[in-house]
Length: 329
Image (cartoon, rainbow, N blue to C red):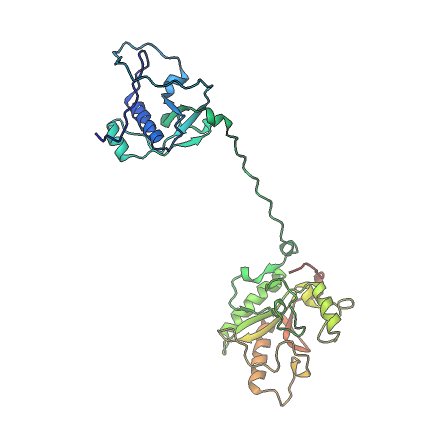
């Protein structure tokens, strides 16, 4: 055998004879002590010897004297259980078992123990180890936007682009107004927008929808009015809030498959007469008018209504049937 593998200590007379499997487990555990994988203070004994009184054996037991070792002070033992990941087969010798199977003991609670795969240890130090309590998971806060029955357009099957201008400084105010670039709408408006995106791709001259704005909190509308009090382009929140505040309006730009805006009569959010939905000034390129009409056609087909003063703004259904919201984005 391998001289590095220690043998199990001799048993004193009248100690119950252990079955082969238990003997091998005890030898394996002893080896693990020497390898530093289990505290050296631990003494391994058979389960049967701990849980029921020892009986005198009629079999002959080797009574050869063993070397005297220094006695350790007696301590009150604490019974713990150690579960082995694998049971060592009875057909293997101790040397083969140690060579083929690496037992990795793990301390577990007694009520979780498997009695068929157990070794009992006496370890005084284990009594001082406090049990760890599982930390309770903090409850997630409810999403106020979901509580307001708004739908995130990104959760729907829509092919298009998000270019939420008020989540950046690229807007007529020159400052960021939204904490995140998201499009939230009432469920009916969201479904209609998904349908409009499909119509746009099925058009004779297919294009994508680029979403520039959807739901807008009332507090943002108030800020817009303070900076730019221009009726017809910016709604006065104290008299007539925007339909964006009801989550029933969208700002849309037609774009190509890379998300680049198609030619339009004006830039988005341009406060100009040329931005009107039916503007026909000679300075407007014919291509821009065609693109504007294509956008209006598919939006009308989906249930949206263009705003007279802005080619990019579309209301859905009857917005006044819905309340004004001020849930932050």
